[in-house]
Length: 401
Image (cartoon, rainbow, N blue to C red; front, side, top):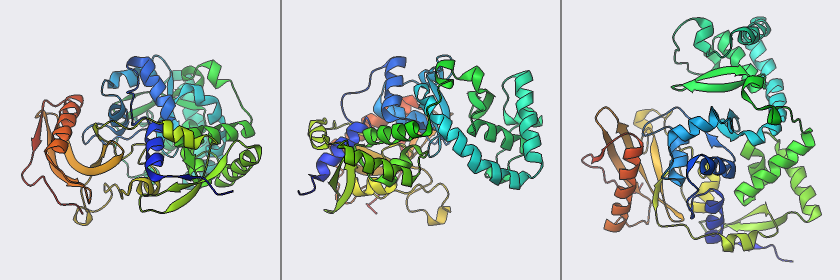
């Protein structure tokens, strides 16, 4: 029997629907926001606020009615979300917390030896002392323990031992993030942050591996074993491979070929109804959306390039003289195509969102209609970022690279 072929246009449509980037717009308010995060699985956190922080831009791109205070409330008073790691720091539905016990155990094993070698005998002593301090005194940030103002670090290798202890206790599940001031994390005992209904559930590892793989498949639409493993970054590629072959044997998955933008084909696993699901996925609206560099639709750069023909690399850590585009350039999505990228920054003190450069993708004609759609979106984004106008600098229009 011939392997089913999912054409590129249908693959893009299914991919965007699973990433909540096509109609209908997610519901408003706390319930709608909670549903949206659950639909995505998680939302990556990032501190860079060139326009607005990545997690806020991810949610705004899908729901123009989104308000940052709603996310704070779901994380704080409502406790419907919690902070931990997937491939990076993220906000995650608290309903998923039971399956993080496996992650806690694996992170503890992976980090304990590395960080103990780094801080030697101080590591265990400081971890015990920090935990005892929080038991007695309640939530702390790393600066509280050191008795000084927060300082910018260049990575875990120059963390103070108390900061290392906090991060280890958080990553291993003893502590949870109870809130933030600015972007500074405050940690407390997990039992004081995570509701008992979720905290006290302990699925066995096999159940969590099954949940991780199934939940990733449902959010991706189709995937290789490596893509399934990378989604939550909890299961190993070998575990994802074994799961796929077991599901294939049971008839719960099939193998397909997915069309790429360059006319090629790539083998993947999918649910048996993938063709019907792709055909039923809504045609994305013509809204021109500004995506965060950390948007879940772009997180897997190679997958985005295969599906959309869009090569993207963030250049934050690239020396200025070697950048092709800019420090923090935003991809532009229109319907089911990535049509360009834009370099801009919110200058809140001046009340202006300033556009430095716009690059259409090769083969994209940038006419008056498309420019008008972009300007309408930037007006909305400017207000969201606390600005009252958009300013286009001289020479903003650039040629495709």
